[in-house]
Length: 320
Image 1 (cartoon, rainbow, N blue to C red):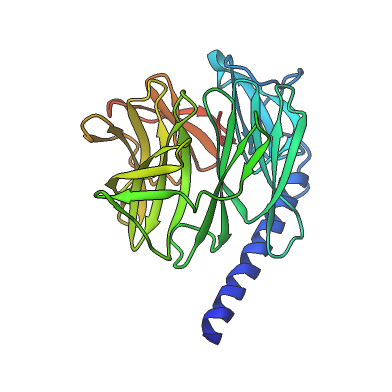
Image 2: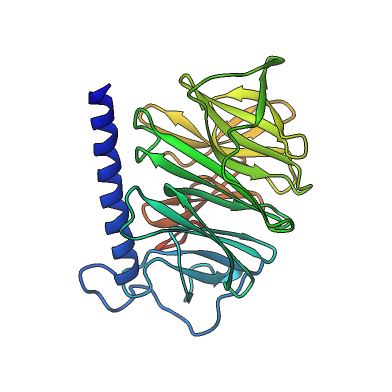
């Protein structure tokens, strides 16, 4: 028991050090660099479907800031805001920014709900470090995943907290761990249950997430009003529901890494996409393509398995 506690404490200390250093780098740049490595345009960053927003990863004073490019000119000059995030997402007029608090031990994250001008109008501080961030299609729900121990899905004994904030009712659900889940018609109970990668349908009620337990990564389909869910299948992580509500893009375990795949919900037929590199991200739909972060850049690949990966926005991650 003492040995387990020592290992856990050591993991938390390492994670905290990484988080603090990460935030320091995000807010000061790397190696004293003062110029961005990408062209920056003047103008206010605003939420809008005509813009692709992201977390800027170009070296310089804008590192970690929320940036934007026009959807029609994704590779062109970017605008940078004053908002620093480790994860970012938005839909309609609601934005979600996850930002690690520097110097906290154990690590803590500020969950910031922002308006269309990126002004903070609600803040929660929760334990853990950012992993995933999303906003429901109608802009009502902001939801996230935080790591509360361990620093990757590959680590034994990691723990997550998947939470939801209802912007209409100003209601916080710190974790969905009390969700009633049914597997093969029976209520599922286990002491190692973790949830991550929430994604909502446009009706504001149906949602999907990953339930991790006993070596499985189950895709669950939930009813938010009833706060219950059922297992659809195994082997699905970080699901992302398509705009038409018929498909799930997700990361699928391949050896020591992950591949992006798309699941037809009506048939549970799976298509592995053309990106062959390991991708540890929650995909994002853009029409008939899927976006994802890889190597500090945002890439795009066709959702039907054809074509080849396309570098969409360099030095940009956490696209929205």
